[in-house]
Length: 384
Image 1 (cartoon, one colour):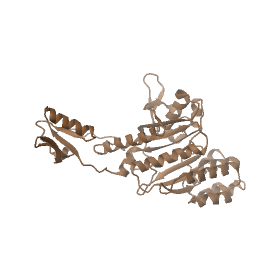
Image 2 (cartoon, rainbow, N blue to C red):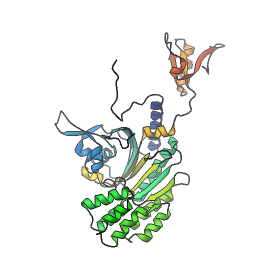
Image 3 (cartoon, rainbow, N blue to C red):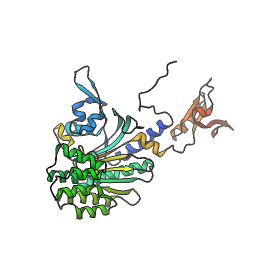
Image 4 (cartoon, rainbow, N blue to C red):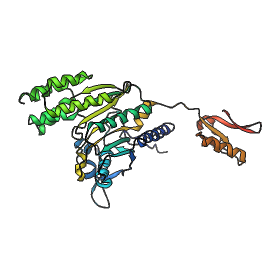
């Protein structure tokens, strides 16, 4: 018999994990619905120019590409749903005021983000369009934290940054092109010596400010230090004020806050606040988001936008198995009393599996910890 194998970093999700993921999906989408986020379902395939334009080179490199046999144009399998939601808001929804969207669907990456990572993710997220101020960033960040709490993720550590700080400094210093890209990479890697070398020819005070960025990370005192040590520019003051407002809105116990002004996650994509959630035992972020006001411009209608997303499968593995009493196995039959008892159990949310005639599998294989039996002319549920 042929040994069927899946491609590297692609895997099946089997019971009971698949049921756990599906249950979590329903609960989180319901959380979003009660806060006014309407579900959209973009297609898995689109033309590459709408999937990748305006989102930076990183997303383009992660996108699987193929040629459409009907049109001859290049298509891509989505690697991120957020640009699709931006297209929907700009091109299809045509709403003038605030619009809130939610989604959950598979995305595919050409290469895994980590050596042991998966290439097919189940991306769940929420996006808010049409509001330019920090209040909408706070709403989205708080929704992300509530979603992680509802999922049962313990000890959430929240990193907060703002790409406007670096963007303002390089603009005032007249830095662009190759040097900007090199500085971006050095700051992301916290390579202090490389930052110093790259800024040797940068004029003061921008040289000193860029060199201070790698050290501006830690608790809330970082914001005070940044206000003292960085140039007193309105763009930087506004960014620090937005970060302080987001910190003020985070209730005690929801997350441990950490600020990093050299965090440039999605620099070519985001335009303001960026945030990411971590938990013990996971080196990479389990949820992330931020403001991305310019993505809709590709579709002819730039609107203020902020949102977050997470990989539902990864979150499910962090949470682990839910306590379960096991399904109920019931005998096969057509007696009205038996059928009534089965339907009553199912209406109450119980899983009832019919023991089909001739099925010799052990009860444990059916994940049934209880059995429906007739005792004293009444159908009762008892331990298997």
